[in-house]
Amino acid sequence: MLSVVGEFDFEATPMFYAHIDGAWPSDQEGPRVVIDLHEVRFCDSAGLGALVYAFNQVTSAKGRLLLAAVPPHLRRRMRISGLERHLQSRETVEQAVKELCEP
Image 1 (cartoon, rainbow, N blue to C red):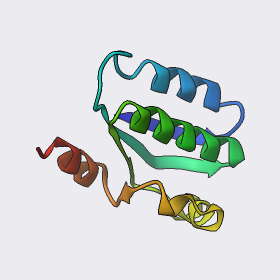
Image 2 (cartoon, rainbow, N blue to C red):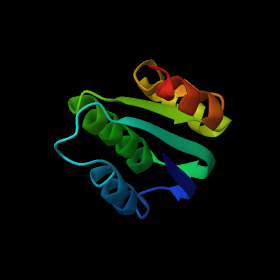
Image 3 (cartoon, rainbow, N blue to C red):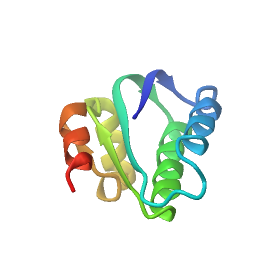
Image 4 (tube, rainbow, N blue to C red):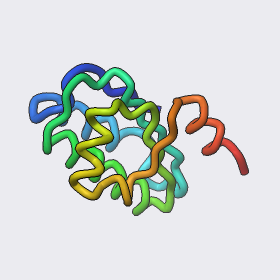
C-alpha cells in the first residue's frame, strides 16, 4: 500500500514514481497495490499522470491496482479527465485491501 499526502503535483511525483518502481520485485507477477489518497489536498496533471503510470506498471505486471478514499476534488478531476473509467477506486482503504486480499 502506498499513501499520498499533501500536494500531489510536479514536485511530489518523482518520489511517487520511485516508490512505484520499487514496490515489488521486477520478476514478480500479479502485484496487488492500494494507493491511499485520503490526505491529498491538491492534485494537478502531474499527479494524475503518476496515477496512470502506477496503473500501467501494475497492469503490465499482470497485477491489480485500486485507489482508496479518493477526495471529492480529485474524484472530480478524474471524472473530467476520463480517468475514472480506467482507475478503480473504493471508498475506504479497508475495502480496497479486503478486495485485493480475497482469492
